[in-house]
Image (cartoon, rainbow, N blue to C red):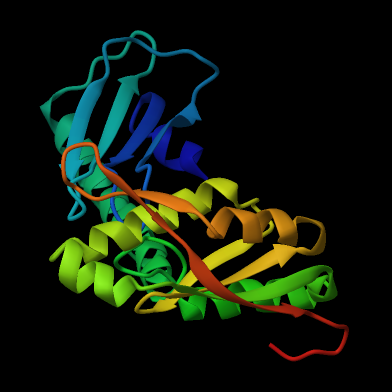
Length: 232
């Protein structure tokens, strides 16, 4: 454990802070700040800090506190730098693996799940034996090509993004709304919420990018009541 490293290096406390900015795959970004080791709360301040920038324009900050009554000398600091650098690369790799997993199942325009993300989610629901409690709904935005080409040129991606965001406000954590390409989407909605969902997608406000103007998007929907034994 960490104590086997901390003891000979006179570490009283070791904190790690990980920050990443909002992006397509993590829309809210994230911030994690917690101690990974503490010697019974027996340490001196201030800590020595070792910051590392990540390729995602985020930052990993290590804060290392000496044991009570101990002061890090130059050799200690060099050893701590080696330690934190090694931990940084391990954290960076884990973060990269996590990000790559998200990329595979995420639509790069809307930030919503893509078709692979839909199948991944559906397989989990099926494995729990709950798939028959859902309706599958295929959605196409009406007149989207005309809107994109004629009315709001070069705003297509933004409109799709706003549309998905508005629908996302309705979704529960045990449901899924995914983009499968173009102006086509697919959803898994709990049986008791299907009518509410259909009402939502019948009139979705999206910003046009022109001052404060909005347009209302409606959609065609194909609805299927999933039964026990159905394949995905």
